[in-house]
Length: 103
Image (cartoon, rainbow, N blue to C red; front, side):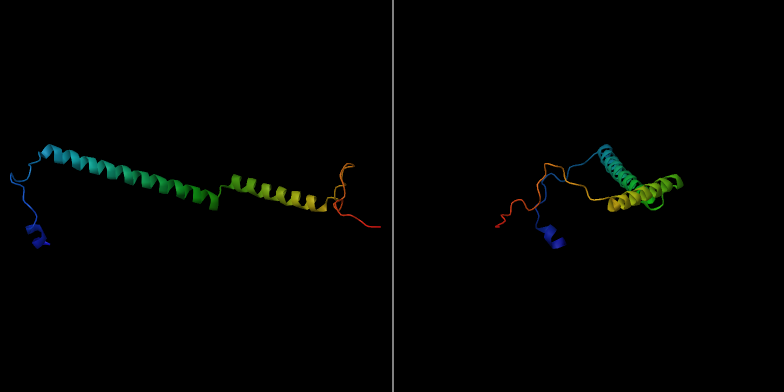
């Protein structure tokens, strides 16, 4: 690695001196950006955990509502299967109306 640096041209006037104020400002910018990023990641992780927790372990009143909804859905399915087939309206044709019947 050091042999590669030997072939790079050196600046004639030397490196530019950067005041300490600018270095501190850039350090604070990086720290603030990292803090913001970590805060947002933590917020999204907490939000995802809350959604997961509410779906796997609902509160008692919500669990009761979910059970009542399931019971009503089962009742609706059984009543639909036991219902008599609907009679077609008087204007409806038979399903085989397009077939030609030769007497």
